[in-house]
Each structure stands twice: as C-alpha cells, then as structure tokens.
Length: 312
Ligand code: CP
Image (cartoon, rainbow, N blue to C red; front, top):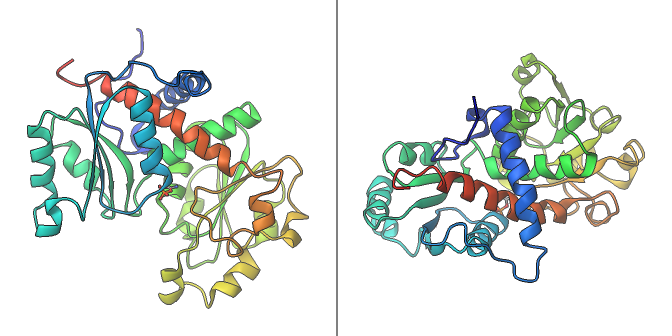
C-alpha cells in the first residue's frame, strides 16, 4: 500500500513514524534547492493563508517560518501577544477560534505553555504547526538538526550523538532525543545531575553522564544547549562560571573531541558559557548551517501539512 502524509498538524516528533520523519527530510532536501535558485519562490502554497502566532520571543524560528511561507507563495499574517487582544485578556482558544473564523489555513504557533498547540489543534479545522511549546516540544528544530546531521554525515543510524546542558527543561533535547532514536542513533545526555534525570538511562540506546570528557569522547555529533540564567537562580547549579568550567565546551575539552565531530547548537548561544566563542565560529561548527537548513525543513513541513487540510 502506498504511504502518504496524512496529518493536518505537526505537534511533536513523538507522534511521527520514522517513515514520516524521513519524508520530511527528503522533501526538505528538494526545497533546499529552491533557495539556491535565482528566483527563490514556488507556487506550492498560493491561495493559502498562514498566521504566525508567536506568544514567546523567537528569532530563528519566526524568521525562517515567515521566509518559508514567502518562498511557498502563501499569504502571511504575524500575530504577537502584545499586538493581539490576548493582552486584553482574550483566551487562547477564543483567539484561535477567531483566526479559524477568518478561514486561515495554517497556524504556526509558539507558546510558553507546554501543550498549547495540541490544545488548539484538536479544536480548530486549521492546521497547527508547533514552533516550540514550553519545555515540551520543538519539532522543527529537531527536524533541522536531523537534516543537518544526515547531510553532513550521510546517515543517522549508528551515530553517537551527545546532547549537553539543561536536558530537564529543554524542548529541543526532548524532540532531538525522539528523532535521533527513531532514526537509529545512540544518544548520550550530559550535564549536571540536577539537569539530567537518570530516568532517561532506562530508554534503549540512551546513556546519561555527568562528565564532560566522557560526554564528548567518541561522539560523532555534539549538540550544546543554551543554559538559562534563571536555572542558576533556581539552584540547579552553583554559578554560571562553575557550569561553564565543568560543562562548557572549551578549547581544553576540545582535545577529547573527534576531529570530524559536528558541533551544533540550536541558538541563541551564550558565548563563553556552554560554548567557547572560537569553537562556535570554528571549522567543526555547523551552527549557521543548521539555521540555513531550518528554512528548507519548514518549507517541507508547511507543504506537507497544507496538503492535508479538509478544504482541499
Ligand atoms: N532555536 C530556536 O528556537 O531559536 P529561536 O528561539 O530564536 O527561534
């Protein structure tokens, strides 16, 4: 039986089969070519309206979704908390219902509350794409990470990937973990014991460690996560300096890193905290390529999801 994409929403990587993840990555590979042409535009979403509904700050995700929509020829409306009636107390559901009443096809949503996109997706006919919700999920970040690893290494299955930092509060870590495991990678989660719960080690092909040398030695990919200053205030580690000395990727720690290992970071980077500036800008870093690939991945997701809307 022929397999095809059937989801009107993209909410989490945990929902997706490895076939669906690979379909998004293969589709993104085709869309990446569009951005390398003289005319960087295709008519795939002509006549479709997309609302970018960002109730939390964003640079990379917001800009690349908007650019992806422009490259696919969609009509676009941008809504933020301060520019909408949410600032007057209107509920999230009422706001979404009003957007739906305007026959909007797709809602791209970032929200500080975990589960907010799932809540809306089950209550509106418009497609909903999760652009990051609380500490829950950031599916398009994980997809662009997978795309970048596959592009650079030629495969994902069997690779050793270390994710280092605040695993406990990170939606990126959670989404990367499910995507990497689905496609056959081995994952090490590293950081202070307060930020890397041991329960993760119960999952097949997942290792938990609290030692930086152990985390980076033998890794094919090292993904550093942003350390949020509010975590220090909450007592998860004694000071930013101490975190940086023990878990920051420094010139000293780079001695243990394979010369062909990829250095990744979802951004925004705290330079000199989780990652030394010279490494962030160095020859092993693919951080800006991740951003470039984010555009292709978001074009692919918008295209696939738009193809499954009820009114088509
Ligand atoms: N990686 C990421 O989500 O960055 P932004 O918060 O800038 O979108």
